[in-house]
Image (tube, rainbow, N blue to C red):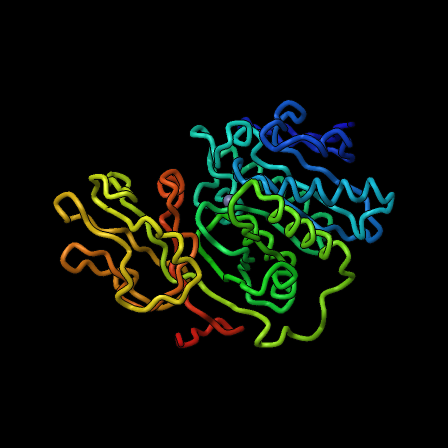
Length: 358
Ligand SMILES: [Zn+2]
């Protein structure tokens, strides 16, 4: 496999560029990739249509569905002997974290908070992502797909960062549930939305063959699409949601899911609430300790809302104070510490206006 034009970053992480992918890699698991690839790797693969599809996988090292999906797509290409429908630009991101089966190493900035728009533009990771964007945008991409997993019980869903027909059409190739978000910043799909239709897809828990096949079908559909349809997607064919609030546990507070002593005792089935329409008064858990700690609630979107008004603490009970639809509520302590406890969303129409809850 010939490596081409790798540019050394002044700050330590380097992008490795290849114009081919060895068949051998199609059998290598995400956590073994470090034995074959020297670091973050970028592949430019041929296809019938010269306008490329950009696909990104393993920005989070423990989220393997994207890599498995790409392997499925490329294995099929190999078996059929047919070229891909269009060129494929593939970014395989955090191989070092994948080795440890971690989202991000302690020594790294998060690979999906480091894209242009990031709060930390000085980091080595931000320089790496700027280089990826430069390389991809120079090729006038057809669309951009970033594949992730999450830690809670969630359906598969797509996320967009721009309310545009082509973005909806791309998202709809994956799922009818589509989340529009503007925060957190520094994510790949937001950076690429300035150049082409762009989505993040969330494929549930890692390690699922079904999830990988779903993502592979999605990549396949995007590779075969010659152009995005002119007509809008029918109203009833798309469930559009927007994040209103991001919930976090204060870094110095303790939490549990099993009633062991902590500042926050979350209900043990917290992630079962994801994507259901919750009414005010829904119980999320209890306060422990001196019962004086409060969750951090920050705006997650453009809604004119007071984030603090979403949660109330009545007699030590943590309850939802307003109707909302949660996403990515997690029972994984590491995800809570590294990212957040979860999101609260509302339904919106195609223009971003909030739709009253049923
Ligand atoms: Zn992720």
